Every structure is written in C-alpha cells, then in structure tokens.
Length: 347
Image (cartoon, rainbow, N blue to C red):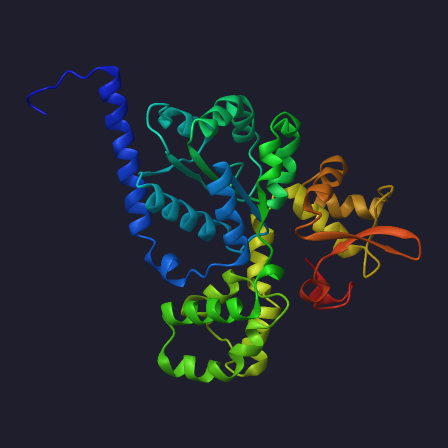
C-alpha cells in the first residue's frame, strides 16, 4: 500500500484473473457437502464426454434435478484433468473479460446463464452479443459449462440465433430424473441422509421406507437433500406414508418453485389448473372467467399464452385425447391434491 507498483495492462489483467481464480477455488472448497453427496449419473457422463470432445456443454432441466451439481463437478474434474485454474463467471461479460487467448485450456463455469429463477432478457441480450467471441474462445481451447432451467432457456433461445451456432444445440444435455437409475437414486438418497443433520434415531425410523421413497416416480435430488435436513422435515410423520409422500408429493417444494416464477408463468399454471382434468385446449379463446384468473395472477392473456409454450417440457405437456390437443400438468397427482372447485384446491 505504501510502495505503489506500476503495472502494465497485461500485469493488471493477470492480477484480476488470479483473484477470480482464487474466488472460484474458495467457492469449490466451501461446497464440501455438494461434492460429498454427488453421484455420477448418465447425464453427468454424457456431459463429461461433450466437454472433453467439444469444449462446451449446456445443462438444461427442471428445478431440483442436479444441474448445478453436475456443472460444479464437471468444472472441478476438467480443472484437475488439464491442470488449469477454474473460473466462475456470472455473465457472458465476465467470461469475456477473463478469457485470455494466450492461456490455453481455461475453464469457465456459468450457473443460471439466462436468469436464476426467471428469464432476464438483459443477460440473454449480452450472450447474443458475445456469442461470436465465446465461440472463438471455445475454438481456441477454452472450455465452458453453462446451466439453465429449461423453461428459462425456452424463452431465451429465440434471442440467441442458435441457427448460426450449431454447437449450442448439439451440446445441450437435458438432465432428466427419469435417466437416474435405481441404484443411483438409492445412492443419492443415502448420501444426502448421511451428510444431513437428521438425528440417528430419526434416520433409523426412516430407514425401512427409504427404498420405496427412492423408487417414487417424482424422485429428484433436491427432495433427497431436503429429506436429510431438519429444517425441511419438521412435523413429518416418520412412517411409510410420510417419508414416501415427502418424495412423491413434494408440496412444499412445488410451492417454493411456483412462487419463484414470474406472473405470466404463474398465470399459465393457474389457468391450466382451473381447466380441470381435461386440460386447456391448445387453441383457445380467453373467456371472462379465464381472464379473471390471468389478471388475478398479475399477468395478461398475451404474456400468459407465450409463457405456456416455454413451460412445455418442464411443468406442462401436450396431450391428445379424442382428437383434442391440450396442455396439462406432467404429474397430475402432485398438483391436483383436491378436485377443482373445492376449498383446498384454491391457488
């Protein structure tokens, strides 16, 4: 501080890069729980191959399926394999700021590239602007790992000119819980309970029901993590019904995800819920009752209609019944706890 040092631009760049490398290393070091509970799945192995062969991978999926955990382990493994420091970037601008063409095999990890819980157009516009340079960085041996929730990327994709950059499409890995094998589910659940803070007597009461819980269709790593923590299981019945329902009917988790969504997405889900078991016709005219639902969620018919399309594949699916195409929920038993119209069914 008392003996100032005169730095050239190159020296300054290296100093700033070194600080970012140190921050990324500290972030990795603090993630001991995530590392200790990680289980390599088919999605991880596929993403690792893509990163090794092409230097780029984008992990997509619904909330709570382990995208960030896979990205973190990919970045750590890549840094170990190529003996290069890891850089954690938050935006395309930060990535480009620290990309050094003279430093081979830099590794960049960007979580939630286009928004954390909602699409942020500003971030997407920056990515669209920086894509030519980012693709040049990849060709120059830099390695990049991106993650995004599927519904957010659905909104971002039209702004990215993906047709001009085939690598964006070719190296998209969708993290799907249906791809997690039975043995991997059991290991994930075991790891989270082992790393969690549940007392031994609570784990003992849960133990007879854990196999059935891991086999539940709605199993996801985030639910397993929550089951291992007292903060999420207060009042949970420790019998078979309680433990299995915590995984197969994750009401609190779905509530948390719902309130993270923007008003248009909330309106879309509320509209389809109000349509009943038959779902919402893909071609529909907004009735006054439907308009009331949309406006009560703080949205507009146009924004709601656009949001429905981005939610297909994550929360919603298209189905055809008796020649009628409609939108409906993926897992109806999780969202339709009570018949529409009853007091408990109100959103």
